Structure formats: C-alpha cells, structure tokens
Length: 119
Image 1: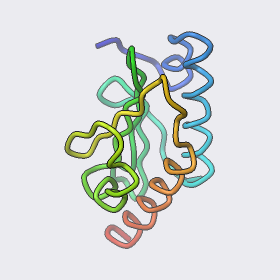
Image 2: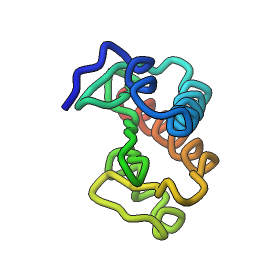
Image 3: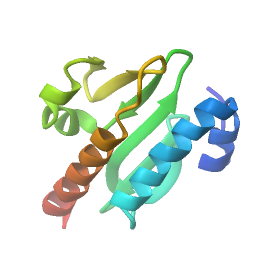
C-alpha cells in the first residue's frame, strides 16, 4: 500500500479519467458533509464527522470502491443490489456510469446517522 501525503496526492496518482471521477466523488462528499475531516486512512481518502468514520473511497483497476460502513449500505440495499458488495463496501464498475446521486444520498444519510449517534 502506497503512502500518500493527502487526498490531492492520492487523486493525482491516477490517470486523468479516473481523477475526474475521484474529484467528483470528493466534491459530493464536501458538499454533503461540509464539516467533515478529510484524511488518508487505509491508503485511501477518508472522511469523518463527529470524530467518527463517515465514508471512504478508492480507485482500483476495474472499479471505484465506496465504503460507508455496513449501516450506510444497508440503508440503500435496494439501490446497491445491482453492484458487487462486501460488508460495508460496494464496487462501482468503471465501465458503467458512476451513480453520483446515490453516493450523495449515502453521504447525507451517514452525516445524519453520525450526528444522531455521536452528538
């Protein structure tokens, strides 16, 4: 796993087409969770609210991984059912449109969840 100084460096390590996707995901997170702390954790962009994990994302050879904890995925089970999933993770294939609106809804849900649980 490569060490990155920050999210900008992480994004810049990919090709221009992947950078565009990652920058859009980052912008959605910043819009929906304006106070979120941004860092690199587990070698990928990570966001926290209330001092607790909110979401993570990462680029891979054939997909974008999005990690919103098991609760974030369970709340959108129907919408995410068309994608390959793991516990608290989903893979958005790069050969299909990335569901940016859905990512935004998941981030909004997680912001509310963290606020209710840890505030």
